[in-house]
Image (tube, rainbow, N blue to C red):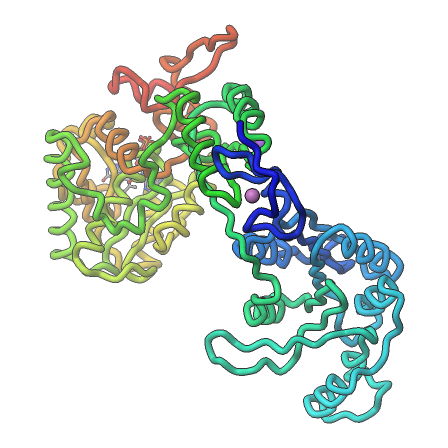
Length: 516
Ligand SMILES: Cc1cc2nc3c(=O)[nH]c(=O)nc-3n(C[C@H](O)[C@H](O)[C@H](O)COP(=O)(O)O)c2cc1C
Ligand SMILES: Nc1ncnc2c1ncn2[C@@H]1O[C@H](COP(=O)(O)OP(=O)(O)OP(=O)(O)O)[C@@H](O)[C@H]1O
Ligand SMILES: [Co+2]
Ligand SMILES: [K+]
Ligand SMILES: [Mg+2]
């Protein structure tokens, strides 16, 4: 390997360093980027009374600007502790960003801490005094209003310009050496940061690639370690993040470097060594935003496409017969209504109906012992699809009576019932409820779908579904009356028993095996 030792890397003039030839990669390029430390200050955060969002905002924003955030620290409103931490951060990192503690009350001591860290005193800054006097109409230097004008002697004031309105902001960001003192109020902090990005911006940009794998972390740890070793001089950062809630992958591998060639090479390295059938290549992060555009002939085998088309026709007919606010989807987090919900959303989009909680409604009849996982999934579905969920409790008939009474505009319930469900053989696409039931039109677009059709549809489109279906459940009722399907019980390579996911069930007729 040829080693260039002459001169400085064109990108990094900070330190003289070696460049390894092949990838033109600098030893520890990654670690040589501009570094930052973030200090979150406030007793309320340590007590858990306020949730800190500023560190998330700052670290994301700095990362986008090519800054390597090395540490986030949370400390209380204590001058000594602030001074110690600021001093350490200031010498350890290229820049320090603090949040909080610059208000007018006794517990706002950040600027005092910063002054002490820099061995300077606090004084009233003429520009700030003038600003505060104008803003608050108070002239007394000892007033709380003018406390805001007392800053470390060597402070620099940075006046930002609103990137949209192009107006100069009223209050500046206070900086002492490499320490930037932000207010704790998130909107103020964000406004200041966006208006002063140039202070933090670097020449660098992180290049990032993701590999999603459907393996356990234990199964890929060795390959990842080999990759780390292989690229250890190339300035590569690899993260492995398990996701327990995703239905399609178990681990997200993130590769990152300031040199995109390193990321490309490492990605290729991993693609060659990870089990290829476990790597997700076309994962769709947000199937909902496709507005049903993914529901087309190319995505499905012809038999299933035929059924999908018929179901959409039933939904189109429903939308001709009823106003959107007269329709709701019977949604209990089960697999059939999850597929249905997506189809109905697509039908609304295709009909040019705006997606909002008035036009898109669902009904949940909650029984006494719901699975927590089901309810979590339902909550995330509400956010994902932006529908209004009406929740009714009690026995199903009573709940439907209450629905009639409390929501008289609802005339039709779209359901995920299939012919193979109990008592469902003779249903049609449009069947009124039985005479001894509260009267609603039951719309059944999925009647002719099989168990496997539902899974093929959902998994092809990467629709999220309730995690219980990945843990051996194949049909869901209440918690006290639902078990995993024994047909999915198997033994893993280490000899312990485990359940396979619902979509692997061979015989669809056995889907209700776990229903007691
Ligand atoms: C909106 C709605 C209308 C229903 N109408 C009837 C009905 O008319 N006759 C009936 O026997 N069951 C009716 N049911 C009950 C369902 O057929 C079924 O028993 C129930 O959804 C429980 O299904 P599961 O056993 O698969 O969980 C209705 C359910 C809902 C949500
Ligand atoms: N408690 C409920 N609240 C609202 N709708 C319901 C409820 N129970 C059933 N439904 C409607 O009836 C349909 C048929 O119920 P079923 O339990 O067979 O299907 P699922 O819950 O979608 O899936 P799974 O068969 O896996 O449980 C559902 O798809 C849904 O539209
Ligand atoms: Co170099
Ligand atoms: K990890
Ligand atoms: Mg169910």
